[in-house]
Every structure is written in C-alpha cells, then in structure tokens.
Amino acid sequence: MTTQTGTFAASALAPANPWALVPPLGNLDAYITAVNRLPLLTAEEEQDYALQLKEHNDLEAAGRLIMSHLRLVVSISRQYLGYGLPHGDLIQEGNVGLMKAVKRFDPAQNVRLVSYAMHWIKAEIHEYILKNWRMVKVATTKAQRKLFFNLRSLKQGMQADAAMDDELVKRETLSAQQIDAMAAKLNVKREEVMEMETRLSGGDVLLDPNPNEDGEHAFGPIAYLSDVSHEPTSMIETRQRDVLATDGIAQALDILDDRSRRIVEERWLKVNDDGSGGMTLHDLAAEYGVSAERIRQIEVAAMKKMKKALTEFA
Image (cartoon, rainbow, N blue to C red; front, side):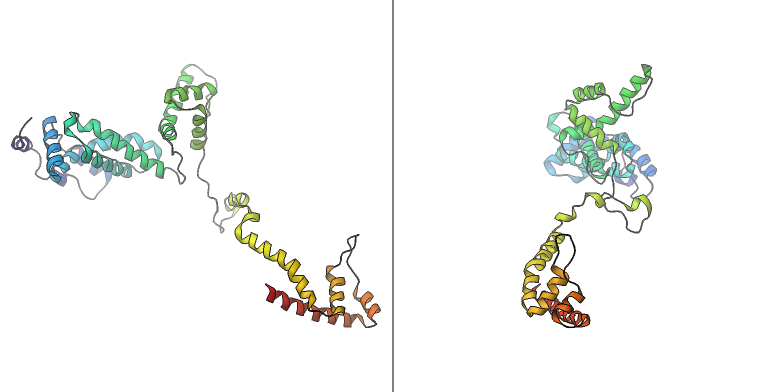
C-alpha cells in the first residue's frame, strides 16, 4: 500500500479542489458533463482515502471518495427513468445513498467502493420511487418491492418472446403460465404477482373531487364509499332526534291542559289502521262546541308551548 505522501503526490494531477468542477447551479446536462470529467481513483488511492476517513474522520478524504463516484450515480439513475420521475431527483437520492456508502465503507474488506456503493445507491433510489411514483404507496413488503421493480421488465420480455413465437394475440394481461413463471423466477407467490399486476395497471383516484368541477370528474368514490349512517355526527344527530321524538314529546305534552293535549294528539300524533290521521278541525269544533278557527288557535298556542319545552329539553 502506498504511503499518505505518495497518495497525495499521485493525486497531484487532480484539481486542488475537485468540488469546483461541479457547478452548484445550472441545468442537469452541465452537472452530468462536469461529474464525468472528475478523475477516478486508483485502488491504492481509494484505500488510502478510506483509511483517512475511518481512522481520522478526514472529510476531505470523504469528499474525494464521493466525487470520484458521482458518475456511478448518474449511470445507475438512468436505469430508472421509465418511472416518470425527474432525473435530477433520482440523481440527488442516489447521491444520498453514495454518501451513506462512503460513511460505512470498510477498506479492510478488500473490495472496491464501486461494488459496495451500488447497493446503497439503488436502495435510496428505490425508496424515492416507491414514495413518489404514486400518491398511495404500492409496495411495502419485500416481495412487493421485488415485484414492483421487476414485473414490468419481465412482462415485456415475455411479450417479446410471444411475438417471436408468432403468437396471434399479444396479451395485455398476464396469462396463467406467465404468472407461474414470474412467481418461480422471483421466488414469490403467484397471488402476489397477480396483486401487483392489478396495482400497477391502476391509477390514483381522487376520493373527493373539486366541487366546482362539472361532469364525470365531479363525482368521486367518496360519494359511494362513505357510510353516512355510521358517521359520528350523523349517529349523534339520529340519537338526539330519537330521544326528542319519544321522551321529549312526552314531556312537552305533559305541560298542556287536557283539551290542548287532545287536539295536538288528534291532529298530529294519531294514525288510524287505514293510514289516515285523527280528527279534523271541524270534528273537534263540533265536539267542543266552538268554531273551527278556535280549535286552530288552541292548536297554535299548544304547539308554541311544546316547541319551547322541546328546546329546553334538548
């Protein structure tokens, strides 16, 4: 292994501050061009810088390890452009994984940083894609994550093979044989393959659409998924209404005199077997020997007393 002095002498051709080669601002193409111009480290230089970081927490050594592998992040991030996420964001997340790899890299294992860092870079990019590909996370378990990142490529490969075999109909959905083959290849259950295929073929749906929108977009799943009967506020209102219709009405009737109570019961609370109501104003007027207008006045006064009593009861 070379000495520390020899290492820095070997790096003399590199810029004194390699960070200066990467513009802090600008377009993505300028950044990619800049990182591709950064010098690569030899195995001896990499070992020396890794030892400096591990033993002395040398941040300059960590910076040189990171800078020399930025092009690796760019290369790996290109593999995930098919998910429709910004390339710059993929690179940024991959750089986070690279920094984690450099921090945990052990030079005593006698492996190159590039081999060790690939796992960390991909892990960070995977996590970013799963969190941002859709509003609802489509993969949480290990098997689901494996299917998410491999199902589409396997499906495309099988469809290509089917086309080469002169299959007349190119399937949009997976056949039973394809599902079994994918499950065996990825070492997962066939039910998990079918579930992930369903998740990937769907899309995000807004539960509660913009009320100002017109047409089909104004009607969302919230209209038929919500259970109004078990909504807490509705349940409380229903319970209060039931109490008012029983105990409340009974208590309000108790404050009326006998005549007023009978008029209210006949006019509003009585229902005959044939579905008809109680006595009419004229029937009650004939019974009490007064005019129908007088019965109406007694009814109005009784209803006001009951309304006041129900308000106090509630």
